[in-house]
Image (cartoon, rainbow, N blue to C red; front, side, top):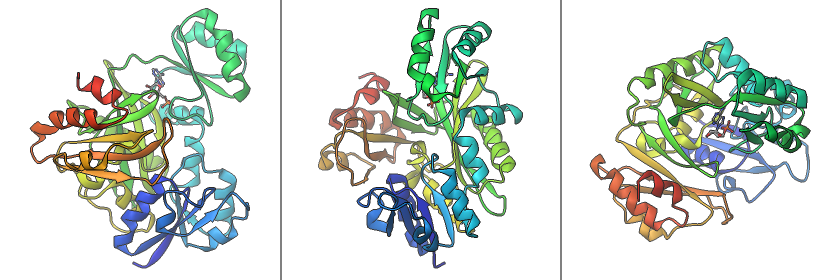
Length: 374
Ligand code: AMP
């Protein structure tokens, strides 16, 4: 195969897609504001910063994909009008960009979700509180990520504050607060021939709204796996999807509730680079290029830990048994994802012990420490 895939965005997801593409002799180009982005070392960056002229980027490849679900739809339209293909399809992107459309789609496909209502004004919040009961989670319909653009209303006197903080967004969604025991995600890929493959569920732990680490397979998930698999397959087939799709779910005493989908490779799937026969990045590239999909098994129990804000000492990380280090070539900044570490010891009995050791090495170990009861 000797082809090029153009990718909207050039962050670490684009970088890892391009890394997975290289052995298949597939090259990537990127459309990104920052010419020194993490992907720059792997392919030409067409900067979206100086000129908004998409043409040079559109001419750089026959087929396109994205690493960012908020890729502007008008840019995707320009690409499609010029006769080029983009996977995932525009429709999936448009739905994922709006929490209301997303939740309506889940409902229409019989995928359980927390009760929700659309909110356009202050009065609507009062109605939502009355109908759904407290607490409710108020979210902007568009543009929020990593917990941004959200307000948990626990008491009636917080209603006006919530509206003051989020009302400018105009379109909001009010959801019942889900009493979940844990958060998991399912990642699947669909090829151009309709073949679907699903990775094992990841159990995800967050710190200050950002993913801290994922455990794969999610412990005690044998009965949840087929259900999650069924939900994501329904979405993939309904959307005539091509590429990798992620579905984030809450585990509750009543079963799984869908929270949101990401029409792209996902942080909770980084473990698959070493942990699966075919990683989410390689399978996404295969799907976009129209190639057969690879196996999505979990070779051995794995924990993926994000490096956030500050780099750890590389030597210390690499001394840990079965540790793989991925750095994204980004400078340090509070809350920024700089890289990740995959722990995959031969003897999975050692996994907890290794996580404890890693927590001592990381500059920001809080979530890992609390999860490991350190
Ligand atoms: P989101 O931006 O929708 O992924 O939400 C960020 C985080 O907020 C999730 O990972 C959950 O921990 C929490 N969250 C979101 N929606 C709800 C909800 N309806 N009930 C309880 N927690 C929620």
